[in-house]
Length: 241
Image 1 (tube, one colour):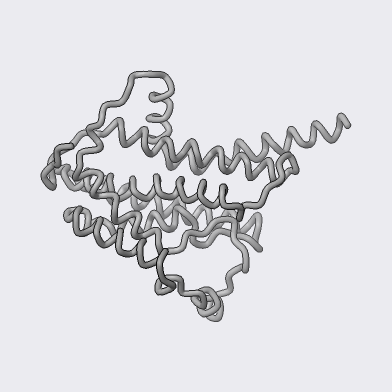
Image 2: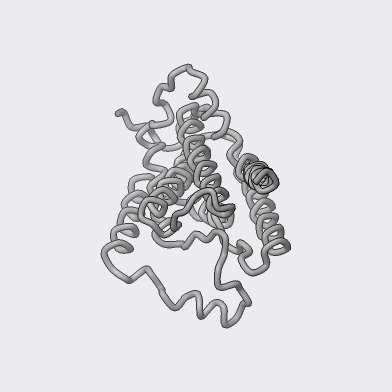
């Protein structure tokens, strides 16, 4: 696969949209299964290896896409899109925190996936122009995390909660390590020109591309549809039984 020079001007990538859209689809499946679990239609533990790896796959797709898209965006003459996206992420993350705090104060989301993506987007921006060193640093972080306890920081939560009142449980949390390492690998995908991979012209691919193009609004509204849908179905079954 031919490597591309840094800062090469690149149009919107259909393959990257499909890549990100695949993460969105898997996320919807994950949350739909959680809704089914919550209303008693399924029985499983979210700590089972299958669900742990399933969530890790979703995060890996989303987070590599951050570094990847940052690399592509550096090749465009107008970088104002960076700040527009950052503002949208900040507002969305704040809205998620506020909504969950008001509805589920004992489990509200104070540092979930959107919060992490916002911070990671800021961190990766100056590093994306050096995709190979960035990827090497990311690989080292992941290797250290999985082979040692150096980046686990088991007492970090208790230290933070001694200064800030946070719930013991939260509906969603993304720890900095090893996931910042995954973000750092993303620019390498852009350097290797993955964004130029051809995509078949089929309905399924078009749907995935659409989901990837509008990943943020889909993330914000999908549970507003799924949760009431499952709740209504449960209520109807209860009334009929």
